[in-house]
Image (cartoon, rainbow, N blue to C red; front, side, top):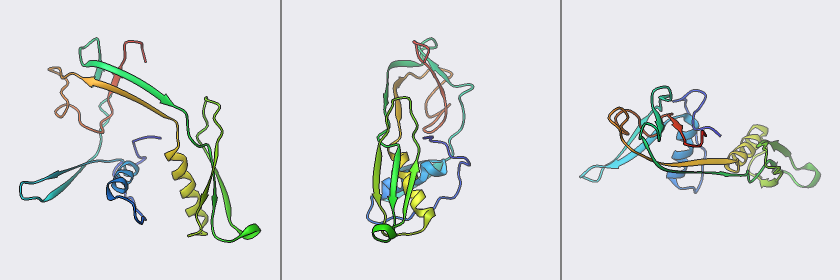
Length: 173
């Protein structure tokens, strides 16, 4: 899944019960294509700031050749789910069922999970629930890098959290 929305800054609605607020805001920000941060003033007021990520990949190129990278590591993990059978209201043969598929992969992973959604019988809600489960269980790839500020590329000045930058690793990845 991508950290960029089709239209960054798009309006996002949230329906939730009994979930931590931070998790809900993180999901909404990712869906809406924004980044956010919070800070506390000296008087105890919590401030919420949001920003739109920018594509800086053409001119922020972090590599060992330009001394902008220190240590780094990369990991991939197979998807945890490839199909979700979402069950809506009803019982037995009268129960609404929707199979939502995704997360095709080159790992050979094929895993189906059952999701109980007796709270709704709306097909759109069942599909959305299945897609959220697929997104939560998607294949992941992560890279950890130690950035080194250079005169021409300084974190917090030339690029920020959420911005798209280019990282060129020694092995060509």
